[in-house]
Image 1 (cartoon, one colour):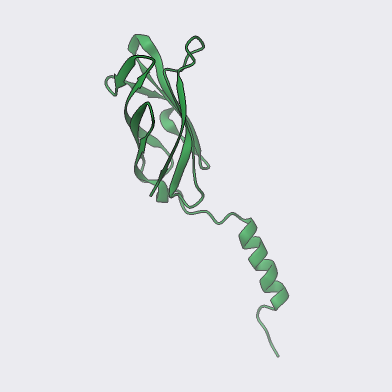
Image 2 (tube, one colour; image 1 turned 120 degrees about the vertical axis):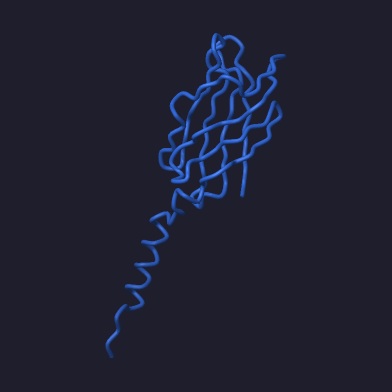
Length: 134
């Protein structure tokens, strides 16, 4: 009897597929991700190819200071390496006013991480975990 793939070969193939991580293509995470936290809300916009955070829209209150997205610029350009990213935004003389560190799930449908509003060595800022799902 001529078999194309034996049970032993099939089992090995199945194990290799499971070990490979089988993640969704980066495009799965493209678009807007809306997140609410205790100190504020933000939206991350991910490029169509799923490899860059192109914009962040936010408002927050931390230690008596209220900030909404006006005249801010992204630093580190929000590159997504693998499933992870780290980037900050700055505001004129205040310097860095928020920092995001996060990770997309392997299926591209969940986002988790931490955001620190007003990060500084002096105040410590307001740091909290976040998550969002689609």
